[in-house]
Structure formats: C-alpha cells, structure tokens
Image 1 (cartoon, rainbow, N blue to C red):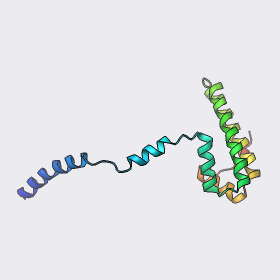
Image 2: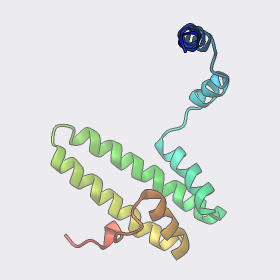
Image 3: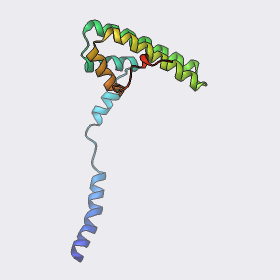
Image 4: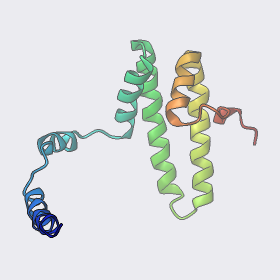
Length: 131
C-alpha cells in the first residue's frame, strides 16, 4: 500500500510537468480565423445563407436587409448610449422591422428555422407582439 501511495505521489508531479509542456495543436487555425475581418452583417449573411439554404435572390435581399439593420443598430447604440431604456426600445423596433421584412422574403419553413436558431421558436414573432 505504501509503495502504491509513493508511486502515485511521484507520478502526479511528473504528469503535471509533462502536461504543461504540451502545445495546443490548432493555434494556426485560431490565427486564420482571427485574421478574417467580417463585420456583424457579413457574418449574419454567411450564416443565414448556410443555415437557411437561401436562394440567390433571397440572399441579395437578406444582404441588403442585414446591412441596413446593422447600420440602424450602430446609430441607435451611438445615439442612445446614455439612455438604456430608449436604446432597448429602438433596438426592439429594429428587430420588429427586420422580422416583418423577413416574413416576406423567407418561406415559412425558413422563418421557423431562423427563429429556432435564434431561440425564439416557441414564442411569437417579435413583430406580432402588440405594444
């Protein structure tokens, strides 16, 4: 028993020092990912095209919609930086507008998938909530 305890006692520091010398193998991948310069609307466009299987026509409309939405969001963030309730209300209105336009662009199945991805599948569309 004493030999086993002594063996484990000597083995633990050896394993710990060995583990500290190991290197992460995906450092080069991390550097590549971090080097890609995409803004919010570009990331949203790519993700929506991939996840929702958008047609070219849908993609063009969604691309314009996302660019407009992110510009409005940036403007609202700057305009209401000191007024959190007004900023929140303005951002919610921007989301309502986007939902209304997306309902015309996307099919019902695509819209449901988008809401599922956003975690809003089991709630009403934000645009359907009455003020």
